[in-house]
Length: 618
Image (tube, rainbow, N blue to C red; front, side):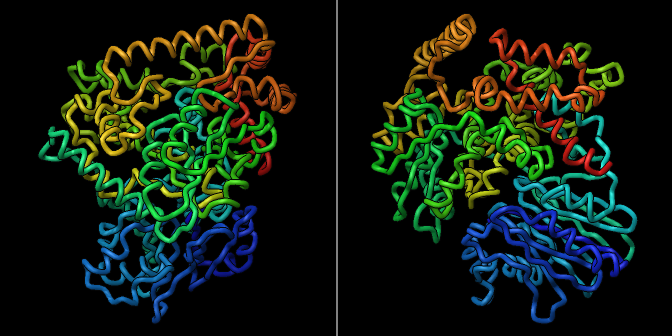
């Protein structure tokens, strides 16, 4: 269950009473329900989907000394009750009550027992403490601040700004990070004074002394024994995946899988198809694309229902403002591909399984280049260049106005700082740990937030048992090109072993030569299609390999909206981007001279961020 939680401690109880409705209204989104409770000088609340099956609500112990709110889900309540010999009455559909009871029994160590994705906040009135904790991976964002005697936290930064009475100011460092990497580094947000809670963190706010103490309760580590027996690992993969998927779908009658041409969703669909629930596979994108043809074959072999839908080209125009407002600018428009189709999906299934972290858990970011590095600095330099996805620093002089051309100053040092806590020796372990703790948390996890605004979701690849067994454990040779994952999938589901993988155009487990040939075909097909489309100015369109057609959507259904927004005098006079640069990239993109879809979408993000948050305040 997701949408979020919120809280505010303010000794001026009159301020709480006067502002409580205005504050909670910030979080009253479409299809959402808000519940709140005020105890002493503390406001706690929860926002959940009206359609959610979860019974999470504000929970109090009988003595009312402990009051809690939570969001997310717990995979292992049965096991916790048995392990800790808890009363059967502890087991309840209200996961908040379960967490509050667990805290009462085990104190701050309660989070160590939880397998799941969650945020939780508990007010301990007797001791004057507010305890906040998140899951091991920091999957759901939780923002916080202390300002003017107010301690505020929430799943949405906009509540924190309003509750703590912070005048929104742009964090200048966030500009270069967003336009270079597509995400922010560390614990930054776009707003000065508002931070993101680190993963696997317990935060305790002392309401008497107004002090915050934080503690990290878990981290990734290198397992002592690296197993290299394929047969043993395949059986363990099969056991743990089956367990993770069964935990995820518990209590559901109908589940959905967003089935693409990748291996993550293929694995989820396959394991789910062996359960007792009805499975519906959804594939999005143009008809008869290579990805859709792959997904159709997978669904046929698994004998599950398969639904295909095209993504409307005007979805940017229709949903851009909602995306930026609800995502506090941190959710990129360019990552919300399916948003126009989620209402329909919600009407058909109880929840959706997503393949988050699947490839990364099994080494999708490991390359031969990384293995050859001799030092940590070599890895950092490589990943820095690899993560520049939008605007390289060499382009800053042309893109930004004079007063912002130095926004990239110290960018590399800030990137370098994200490696400061990594003490591993092997380059592949350094790279993988950094991916887990940085890019996944700040970019990939954020990019799934928009689905949680509409649907109940589960993420089986983030099951604690699965992660603890496989993360950083496989030898380099098994991680490279996800070799182990490919072979394990073939071992578990031989019926799917001859169906191509969209990333390589050949079946998983193919020889290295076949992989090279497949990737070469992919590269040349993409280049050929791009050259011909540009030369013919879109008069002939080739089917893309997957669902993403941002370059075309900007030229068609969302064109007028984007041009009107980015060429508006208010945008051009804002003082960030060089107006001539903005006009040139739009002209070049619309006229098929070059593809600037990422930069254009991020400019839309950035302009709407200012209109919704900064201009509105002024």
